[in-house]
Image (cartoon, rainbow, N blue to C red):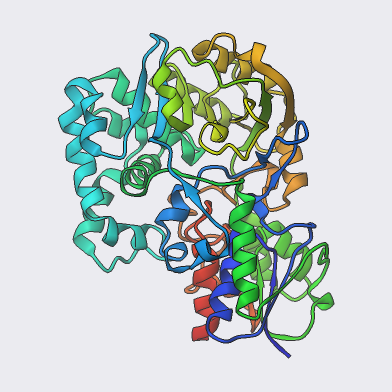
Length: 467
């Protein structure tokens, strides 16, 4: 009998397996796709020699994660590359707002709002060792209540509400871009917290890319797991728990819909109803490009960052995200983009480049947003379309087909609002356990939610070990 079987080799499934294997437990990971990785996969989507990250590309949560920080993944081939600046936000006037690693340098680019920005982020960065374990933890019960309270006074607001502290439009558009990673209406609480966390991570740890693509993270995790005696079996889709080998514990790196599919016949009706009520958020429409040169940004400083936020004004970003929550699309979407090949020459043939962008769309939307996204890029980088060699698109429907955990294209594994942030996927004292003995959940549909940080899997494995 195995000690544990993990279904799904995404970041959380692998994190759970590694945590158990490090304690001497025998572990088997079963993955439906031919490669491990989940949201960390990289593929040649456009032309031979162009390596594209299918979903996750920038890894601020990985380098800031307490779980990843304790792993010797560099010994297994993983290298993170830090661009000179974590983030660029180009504007219509041909300039760009830059997030620098230094809070002071970032504040210097925000005019009269510089001192206000420093008053917000200096304490957060100073308290990073206290805040990050709390923010990436399972429950809102902090070990350092004063640091958590300082964060909560700001983070429990809406992004629009926090932006009222600022006077400069540059600062407001910059923070709106950060907060829009929440994939919610920025008029809702606690969207400010997403902007604060991402700003904190950028200043404290950077927003790096993985050399060779995000697949390198998965490959290093698999290599480390095997060095601990764990096993990984790919290309095996699990349709029911009854197919799995006998184990003391089974952990599912699956969204609630997947849990119902494979384990519904064993789960009590009350718990099944809770899983069926689980709310998924908006999806994404994503485009990958092979380019014959770098993106021709009007603001040259944009070439110092791997990540870019494209939205001309704070109100435009707010309206774009509001439209998505009304199940509408806009012809001026807020666009998130990455240009990893500027810093990692293994991503494309010599002189060529990869580029990646997505926008938010209603859950399950089949609408093709390619033209709207490319027009937004051209707005800040005239001549971009002339650089395109090939493109590959994925609608929210196709995102789910690629990874069933992205229900309706929701890359966060479910809405992360106040109602569901700590009750995902159902209200239980231990969110990783189920009413079935020995059956646990470890996907991003458990706390702390989406992102390549491994904490959902780590905390689920801790629940197994303490049980």
